[in-house]
Image 1 (cartoon, helix red, strand yellow):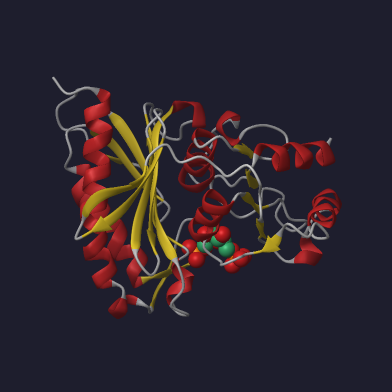
Image 2 (image 1 turned 90 degrees about the vertical axis):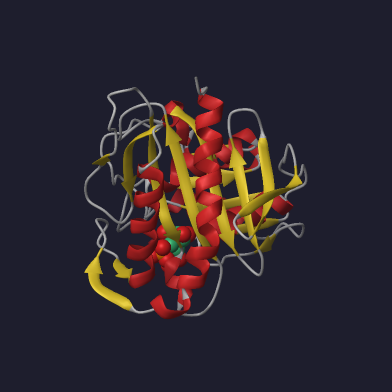
Length: 289
Ligand code: AFP
């Protein structure tokens, strides 16, 4: 009988195996689809393609009983034997608007042991695939964080037990500066003069998070005056990335509490996201008190 660890491994293996197919499909799918996703953003042909591919392959696994994605309004039940299983929430191509300028993007996977929408405390695993100059995958399974090279759809370990470096050096903040609330602006004014910190912002959360994981630092897509819950989505982005960064010794926050403690009320709910070294996130939470 398969254990939960076997099921998580099967999901990770399936996601890695699809990476070359997705990468190969990108050049011809940089055009818009004439559709918007459930968050009202323009969908590219690549977003829709990757979503269908993940549904076909992850939905076919016995262990996956629910599939949902940033690209579809509703949860797809994928249970065909009535056995309990895991729910998968996926951002098929995070940062797909970077396709036009040929910059970094990736896939984010959240694995919950609960029906969706689920809280971060229901996560049992999370991972992301990063399509950079090389394809890498970072996984967290509750037992540590591992970085892999994905070569021909197969994972080869690069680093086991990945931890955020102690001395942070990068920061990246999304949203228009005049749209930032006063408390967040005040926090950025603490960070910017620090000569050990430099700005790195790429327009794909997954690329910016990987920089934080590599160099130490902070990524935020904060609440905005025009959008009090920010831009990023809890089920598909905030929770899985919070789980990975916290598993690597960092901290995640909506400004008050860990992202993993935020109540899940809606599949496509947004949440302010602040992620990075514990010291930096604690300072930010102090600013917000
Ligand atoms: P897309 O997937 O539509 O490109 O959005 C990417 C994203 O959700 C996240 O990955 C980025 O951090 C953020 O949006 C970038 O948003 P801005 O374009 O407002 O900087």
